[in-house]
Length: 247
Length: 368
Image 1: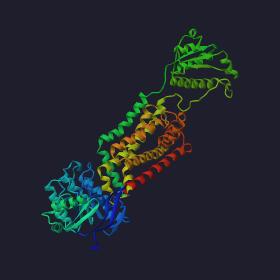
Image 2 (image 1 turned 90 degrees about the horizontal axis):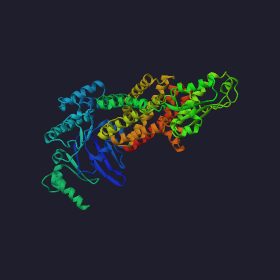
Image 3 (image 1 turned 30 degrees about the vertical axis):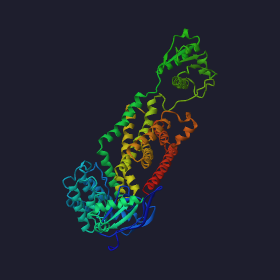
Image 4 (image 1 turned 135 degrees about the horizontal axis):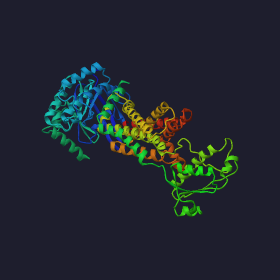
C-alpha cells in the first residue's frame, strides 16, 4: 500500500462546453514527495486539483488518489485528503477554535480525540495567540496557517494546496513552508500549486502546465540544466514563451 | 447524524453572531403586521345612505335604525329631498338609497312577497361593494330575528351571506394571511442567502472536500431557520390575537403541524433559488421577487383568486401561500379540521417534493 503512488492520472480531461481546461494530462506523484504544480493563470491547475479532490467530475480519463478511483470512490478519497485553497474558506464569524472543532466533527473525529488533536495543531502551528479570535479579523498570514490547521486535522495522507501563500508576506511564507516541510518529513504527500519560483525550488519535483497540457516534469535542478537557463524563473518563462510562440 | 448536528450548531452560531440580520428577521414581521393591520385598513365606513320609508311602521324604522347603528352608514339627507333617488346619487349627495315600500311589517308576519329597494352608486367600486355587502348582512340579521322560524320571504333576495367575519373587519381577514406571507418570505429569503453566502465565500467548496454529503449540509443549514420561522409565526399570531382580536377558533396544534409543512415548502424554494443564483445579492433579489410578490398578489391574500384571469388562477396553484392561506384562515376563523384541510396540506407536500428534487438535481450538476 505505501509503495503505491499517491496520485496517478492518465489522460485526465475536463471540458467546459467547447473549452478544454485540462487536456489529457498524465501524472504520477510518489508518496511523501512535495510536488509542485506550476503554470500561468488559466493553465488548468485549479481544474485539475478540483478533479482530484472530488469537487469536479472529469470529462474523460482515469485517475486514482491514494489508490482510490476518482469516479467511484469519492467518499474514501475525501476522508484521506486535505484541501486548502488560496481563498480563505473557513468561517470568518467563528473563532479559530470553533472552526477547527467544526471541521474535526465533519471528519468524524471522536470528541476526546478531537480536543487532543486540536491542542496538538495549535501547538505545532503556533496558533495559540489568536485561536479564540474571530478568524475573519486575522491578518492573511495567520488565517492561512489556521486554514492549514483545519486541512490537516484528520491527518490526511495527501494534502492539496492551491496557491496557499497567495498574498502573504515573505516572512510568513518562509514559516509556512517550514511547516509544510515538517509535514512531508512525517510522510504526508504535498501537492502544491504556486506562482513563486522560490517556493517551486522547495519542491522535489515540479510539473509545468500550459493551456491544459503538462509540458514538463522533473526536479527543479533537472529542468534548469535541460534548458540551459540560469535559474528556475528563467526556465519557466522561456518554456512558457516558447509554447506561446508555437501557438 | 452527528455531522448534521454540528452543522446545525455552526449555523446557529452564524445566526446569533449577526445581530443585525437576526433583528431584521424578528422585527420585520412585527412591522409588517402593524402596517397591514392598521395602515392598510380596507374597512369602509361612513357610507352616506338615504332612507325612503314609505312603510312607516315600527319594523321599518327598526330596519333603518340598524343601518345607521351598524357604524358603516351615516344619514345622507332629510327625506323630502329624496323624491328622486337617482338624482341624489348622480349629484353625489348619497352613496346609496334604501327604499322601504309599504307592506314590510305585513310581510314579516305572514311571509307574503315583498321587496326592498336599494340603489347603490357604483362609481366607487369598493364603496358600493362594501355597501352591498354590509346591507346584506344587516338585512339577513333583521329578517332572521323578525321572521317566525320556517317562513321564508320569497321576494327578498339575499345574494350573499357573510359568515365567519360577521363584523367584516379586514384585520381578521388580513392578519392570518400575513402570517402566510411572512413565513414564506423569511424562510425562503434567509435559506437562499445562507447557502449563497457559503457558495460566495468558498466555504461550501471547502466543506465539500470533506466527507460530508451535500444533503447533510443543506439539512443542517436549514433546520435552524425552521426554528426562526416558527418563532416569527408565533410572534405574529400572538400579535394578531391579542392586539387585533383576531379569533382563533380551531386547533393550534393542527396549525403548528401544517405550518411546519408550509415552512419546509418555503425553505425548499430558498434552497432551489440558491442552486441557481450564485451570489447573496442575486439570491436575495430572486427570493424577494419569487416570494413576496406572488404570495401577496396571487395567493388570495388581498385579491380573490376566483376574480383573477383564468391563467393567473392556474398560476396560483404553484404558490405555496395559496394553500397555507386556506389552511390558516380555515383554522383560525372557521375552526376547520384536518378533514377539510388535508388537500391543502397534500398540495404543500407535493410542491415541496418537486422543489427539492429539482434543487438536488441542480446541486449535482454543479459538482459534476
